[in-house]
Image (cartoon, rainbow, N blue to C red; front, side):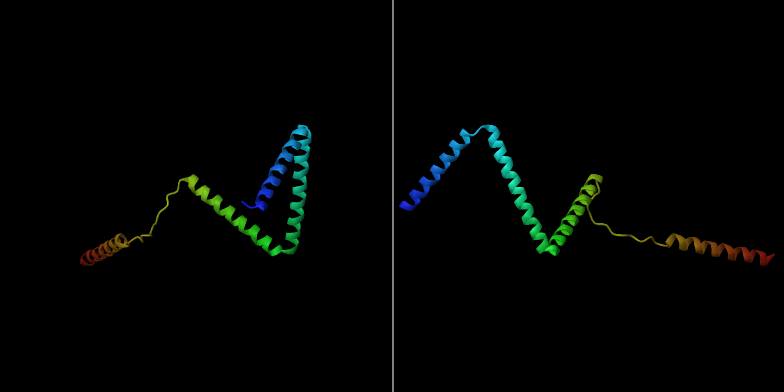
Length: 122
């Protein structure tokens, strides 16, 4: 281990000890106020960065918002589909055959022809 690494380790341990002693010296309310102040500072800084990014890149922000909205809609539909208990699978359409309709049509034509023959024979 080099002397530089030893010095950096010592410095880190001293900083840790100073932080621990400061934390124990402050009352708990002061520590809460300090955490709250840091949180407010972080929120304000984040808001400034966000507004600056929005002003410089409105198209990226709009595209991101649209993408998030589409993902939300897709997830919502997926959840609805799962809640309804639909079955996943493949299906194919089978067209109805006209065989029954053809049989009825030929029977009615034959019946009309025999009735006409009977009236002619009389």
